[in-house]
Image 1 (spheres, rainbow, N blue to C red):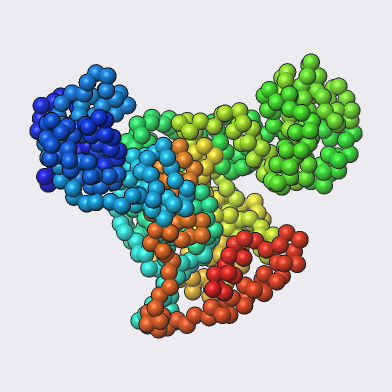
Image 2 (cartoon, helix red, strand yellow):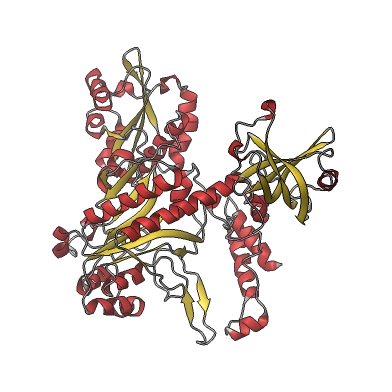
Length: 620
């Protein structure tokens, strides 16, 4: 390679050296005949000086250079004048006086700025991703991602794990989202699925004697997208044999500590707190609690039941509850705002209504205060810790609706108060999840996470008695209110696995068809084992202060699961379809969508934009 240095490494200790640099023209400035070019590569910026009195040919060539030209320069390092030192740049004390310039590739005027201070719209960033990735900020994101991946690999390798690659073309199995399917040309009418996770294969690796496995796999799920979801994402995935939950927790803590230290220099505290699912729902209204602030939910059901407010009393008698959160300093909120904006927020998140108490001049004020004696109001103050100028947001409803509404309201208030700091990392494990949950639509039992979670020992003999009470070894890793990982000890007994499948309504025949290869492997002896899948993209995004994982992915998809840069997904030619034994019925699909539009038109809210766009696309 001809270049002697990168654009981000020269300092005053290099003054006097002859150097060769290569990179992109970031900026070009003409100051009274002397031309300055900021040369950029992924390592940084270096200022190049073209002085006609020093080298006229180089100066004339630089006069023709424009933004994003790729050039090579030869020159000598010299110190910048004191008044021109740029303390914000690592190379800010030096510059290169150019002796020779070579244009390696010309560039048209870019459609977006390669500038962290002038960020283009989302659509343009996705369309011209190769330009967006040139921005120094995006280059730093990729570097953090790289360091995090290498740290995870090193830590797990140092702890006896083998990196083993599992297949990308797999059997379709139900894992909670739709599969992406791939037609098999040589097996007409048959399809592979792209893996939603390596779950079954890593369990088979444990049955194969691998003992400790890991990989950083790409997982693919055909699901609706949002900021923390993409059709393809990466995990730090590992599985261990002969393991207890404490072993898994210790290994996850070790991985996280290594990753945060190596990638961004952060020292996170371990061990992480452990909170049961029941306690998380009780105190925070969610199984993904944000521990950067307090403001826990407080149950005042027994107190308000002693009062005469019939609305709450009726809710409680029907199995509901009344809870509140205490917002410090919120007593100045107007009644109009409380009964408008905040009530609408609570309604949006599932609760029927919101009421409140304000602490003013040492007394609780409220539209419903008249229904409670001074003694009961004092009990509420004692229970909640409410102080002068604090406000209690109070919701009464079904327990799940109260949790949903106050859990979201808690986070909203924290945002308003500036309590959510991106450089503060509060981890916790949420443990002791129910194994089953009741599906409202089918009124059947379904796994809360997945059907391979080992029930806790005390529940194994009582599985069928009351499935809704069965607690399993499932756990989640949560950071700042975001779920990063799910894991568990796995079922390694095929008879126990069949019992779980039977509870969720899966017949032996269906189980054999979908999971027969796993069940068969376990018949020949499988060790107790467990593991986890850590959401790598989410981890890296949170490290650098983003919720949107697209910011740390090189080539993400947009909200329609499309890549505007390369035009995927795209049509394939008739020959390919024929070879794969596929015949498209787009006319039938268009008719189906038109029928849906006609039905939607009868709805007062009308059809969704997505449905209109989809029908338009098929019609065209």
